[in-house]
Structure formats: structure tokens, C-alpha cells
View 1 (cartoon, rainbow, N blue to C red):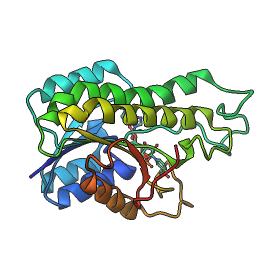
View 2 (cartoon, rainbow, N blue to C red):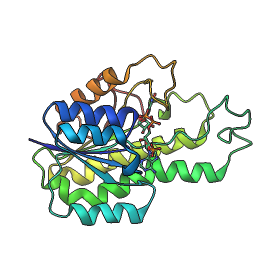
View 3 (spheres, rainbow, N blue to C red):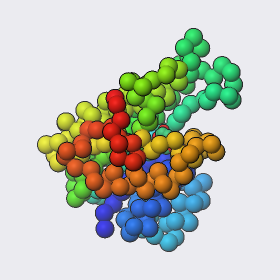
Length: 235
Ligand SMILES: NC(=O)c1ccc[n+]([C@@H]2O[C@H](COP(=O)([O-])OP(=O)(O)OC[C@H]3O[C@@H](n4cnc5c(N)ncnc54)[C@H](OP(=O)(O)O)[C@@H]3O)[C@@H](O)[C@H]2O)c1
């Protein structure tokens, strides 16, 4: 069966991706920052082919350590799911993501997690992906990073996801000669800790859509920005 590596696999969309791929019989490498605290992943690992591994995508050293452990292992699909929104409106009036009060420590952490992390991890694991049969790299992006549709504000989050969209579009070109396809996918506004309780899309539906898009990903779709339901998103 194929192998998928999922980052941020301990909760939210990452955990549901791990559950659904495991249920479909895939081998799952579930990467998360704190494996010792990843109770639900360990329960899943008791019943299915799931390996829980340590990974902080904002740390070059952590990515290097994962690379060393995985040398020679084939990965069919790499899913860059781990993401950070940063402080949200409502929690504090001056939450550091609006023009005039940008917190650059927040911006730096969000960029390192959402934009630098997927690029660095893809570079580190590209030989693993090239050794897989499916050869796909997918990043969970966000529709609110669409430059065409921005409403302003949320500078750290929007700009980090817009940057990773460029990374994915560029990787599609650079990796085409190796038969590797890429996709930037928005999961929709999904009911997770990040999406909050008012989000309209249940996580199971979002992940079913993400899996369907990954299944159909081929050269004709490589480098695109799509919603989980398959519709194309404007850059
Ligand atoms: N939910 C939505 O409505 C929505 C909409 C658009 C896009 N997205 C994107 O979908 C992806 C998954 O989000 P979600 O809704 O499942 O959010 P979530 O419930 O907040 O989960 C985020 C996950 O990312 C992990 N993470 C954060 N920083 C990390 C790092 N430096 N290294 C490794 N893991 C890290 C978290 O790990 P810890 O448990 O260790 O913190 C957690 O597992 C994100 O990329 C997000 O931007 C979500």
C-alpha cells in the first residue's frame, strides 16, 4: 500500500487525514511536534499502520533529524499540513496582525511555520518522494491568501500562505522532470481549533475532499491552487 507523510498530524485536519488514510489501508507517517502527548495518534497506531514521528516544521534541525531517520524510505504523498494562524481578532483588540500594529515576532514565526517549513521539508524529503510510486507534494494553504480576493489585514497569516502558494507553483515546474506533482489546497473553513466552532465545514468532509483532490492530482493539475471541493481558486 502507498505511504503518506502528514505534518501537524496530532489534531485537526492532520489527525483526520491520518485517520482516513489509515482506514483506507495506507501506511501513515504521522509527524507532530510532541509525539509523547499525541494520545489519539498512538491509539490509531495500535490499530493501523501508523508511525508517529517528531517534527517541528519551523526548525531546520528537526527537519534534518527526520530526513536522517527516513533515508531510503519511499513516500508516495507528502502533505504539508502543519500551520499556524497566529493571534486572532477578538482575543485581544490589538492582536498584532493588522497594519499599524504588526508584531514582527508573530510574523516571523508564522512565516517560518507556514511558508519556510513546507519548502524546507520538501527539499529535505524530495528523494523519498521521488522513490514513491505516486510522487505528490501537497500543501494545505488557505483561500484567504488569495491576492485577488484579499480584504486586507491578517498580514502574517495571509502573506505566509500566499508565499507558500508561490513555493508550490514553482516546485511544480522544478519537480516536473522528476515526475513529481504539487498542489496548494484550501480545506475550506473547517471546524478545528484553528477554524473554531462556527466553521461550516466538518473536518471529515474537508479531509474527504482533500483526499479526493490528491487522488486525482496529475500533471495537468500540478502547480494549481484549489479548494477541497475541486474548484480552482484565484491566486
Ligand atoms: N481550519 C480552517 O478553517 C483552515 C482554513 C484554511 C486553511 N487551514 C490550514 O489547514 C492546516 C491545518 O489546520 P487545522 O485547522 O487542522 O488547525 P489546528 O487544529 O490549529 O492544527 C494545526 C496543527 O499544526 C501543527 N503545528 C503548528 N505549528 C507547527 C510546527 N512548527 N511544527 C509542526 N506542527 C505544527 C499543530 O501542532 P501542535 O498541536 O503541536 O500545536 C497542529 O497539529 C493549516 O495549515 C491551516 O493553516 C485551516
